[in-house]
Length: 386
Image (tube, rainbow, N blue to C red; front, side, top):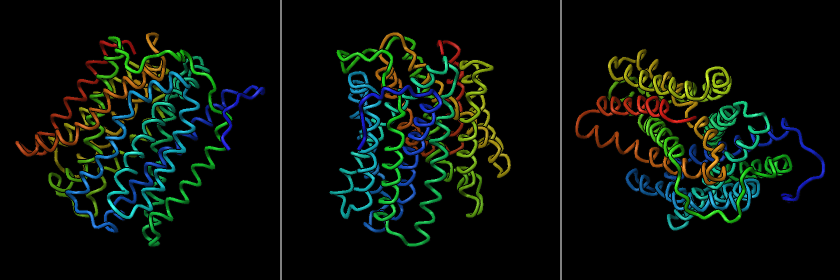
């Protein structure tokens, strides 16, 4: 049973940090578990590639419709309650995905999975802002997001093992869901109990101020790059680099590796250079990496470029979320929801934008266009208080 009552015993800030870090890891594991078994579900249900693309849109649909509600819930009820019940919904939806036998069952579960993912995303980041405040605003947000990325590797490895052993997704997802709920039960008592700026009368829709719009613009540009790398790295290495089939996935692996590594180093760098300079540097690294892969389309240079892009995209979103959570205009939950909503559209638009530009010109031209978004990250960061 998850207890939501306050404990009389004081909790150290280190215990808060470990608990919230554990939640980031569990959430990353939940998402990666589903992503690792998409081919299995597709094969079992006989879904074509074209149909699969439409089916998978159910997740961002669930995220999109729940974005304004999530900010309001966090402002009204507090991030602790929302993240605890959000994790339960996320794990339960994962079970539904594993045992669905038709599209009529799969699509609603995907929508719920998107809703659960969004509830936990906004609320756990609000928790992270609360922990960061306990550290006197010492940057620690990057390490939380690094744990999410690390869980992605763990989830992919477990998924590969399960597929190798011919274990059905439903059975696989039961083990992961039980692990997530057990981790939640252990961590729940050490989460931050009171958010700063919780307002029970906070309206659902609040117009972001100029600073939050600027932070949202940074997140938008960064997530355009990030979404493009997630969906098009393998295609670029196959069609432009013309890598052997054993090397087609190395670009994506390189990107994900430096992205995770960069997040663990982002806090140290932000403490020394300041968040604004780190974001500006990240934008330049992203643009440099993409242009390297575009102008020098060979395996070694493209691999180097994708490594740079991973470093470049690593710290932007954690630092932007950290800054948004310190907003003086609205509660942390509403501020994060506002910035996350703007950034979310960038994540959605990035992949199809590359496809449209590539269809009209070439894949290299489309990647050069995405490099411009990296430059926009640096440009906007120079004009926004981070």
